[in-house]
Length: 131
Image (cartoon, rainbow, N blue to C red):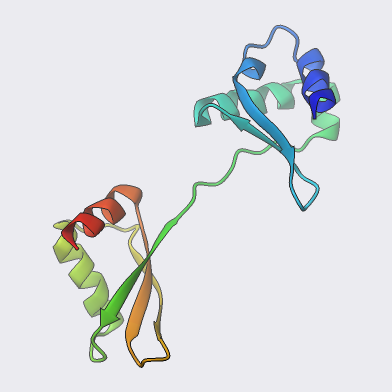
């Protein structure tokens, strides 16, 4: 790992972005993952790699996609439709959000119905506090 970091540092001499690397690992898909202190630093590092001809030829640098936060809502009444579930979330949050989406509903082995929804982080926190 240190070889990789050193090689990137040599290629990006004088670049301050390299100082903000927290961790360098290779994942199970044989992809090099460079963790930076924040998203802005990751973007700067990616841009520096793209500007360097030697690195750009061998590295396909990308910033990670934003994660979508999923939440499971337990014990939904059988008669509730998908629209009812979204409407209930909207009422609980006291706002409409185009980011709130119902992924699916399912029934567990005890015949209780649950739903998986995608929310923004602050909405998930607020819903958790509401109960």
